[in-house]
Length: 96
Image (cartoon, rainbow, N blue to C red; front, top):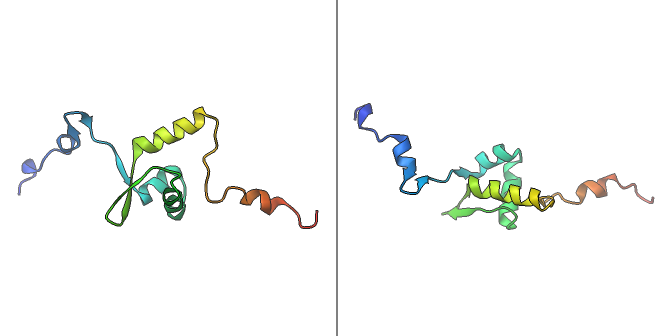
């Protein structure tokens, strides 16, 4: 197959409604959010971040993640994570 026969990436990602949503893996999302992959899996399993499964693999729409972040900022809410409250407990001194 010649290079000119390969479909243009832009054409494959652009449909009638415009560019296709950016779909990310858990690893890509963890890098984007600067969290561990295991934290991403915990958050999506608990329903704290939007995601969907294809077979056994989780996938995430970048626009949905960004929307969730914007909404939480707008509402002044802290995104809840699996470690919430543990920082407070670790700072407390026993017996005090």
